[in-house]
Image 1 (cartoon, rainbow, N blue to C red):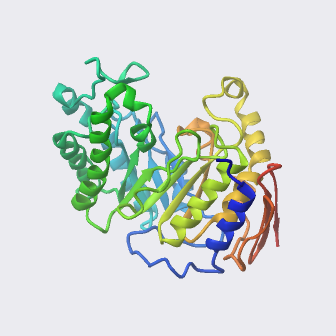
Image 2: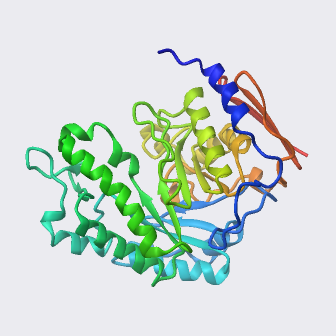
Image 3: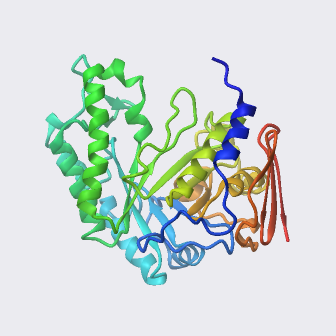
Length: 384
């Protein structure tokens, strides 16, 4: 059946209204990062493969946001294990900014060797996910996957999260790789019965994480996908606090239909009082070999030139507790600490609902007028 996207657009904006000012349906949550419309709400998500952040870098992060996820491999040249590096970094950042919420990256499906927990996983071959032919299911031929249908695997995983968050200095856990778990192509690898068991295991590990961490710690998961055929909605909204939309306007999610779907997800989750982390891209990523050959200064200029469209699309949909991330990767030299003039402009709360005309959107903020055309990939932000 052919989908009438214009009709869908009209229905979406009729049914999902962007509320003027504060989102009246969102309940204040003490464990959320403190939110403000004063400027573009920015979050950070990165790993520094060398040592911990320098004093200058830590001050930069702590004074520009109060919401950061520290990635796998952070501080790997200074610390043997990611768990120790994230713990020390969390202490450093929270000392500089007591309101900082630091999120512990802990992949829900892939066994990364930089974690101390990897050593325990290595001791349990019965936990390693296998294909129907009995061979290990490896990503890129080297990373084992967790058999989430195994209750002992889930208990081990949740215990690691508990140690980092409840016993440690982090404020929540980043549960990565949900789209990889639910991909329908896995049925051919695991068989239908195993596939269904692992889908149930994914549901179970989210619920078990919530029970172990309690209601006053953050659970962030990745996430929503609008990319065909792996289109995934916000299926864990009830059990989690936050969702990441990682491929906003990039990685085959750059069609007007995909961007609209992601904007709908931002609105829906925001109106439910949830945190939404939008990872936007400057038109290239670390996977683009030609772009990566360019000097850093050239990449910076290109990112600065291309920021208007993804930022405008974000602002049109953003609700309270929505955060913007903009870089071309997840390690420090991929633009993770780059800063743009738009982030220093006064924004203020939204003054009215978004107004649509075809694929065009307009939205007024106290200190900015935002216009975006999803079809032509054009946008304008007029700062008042």
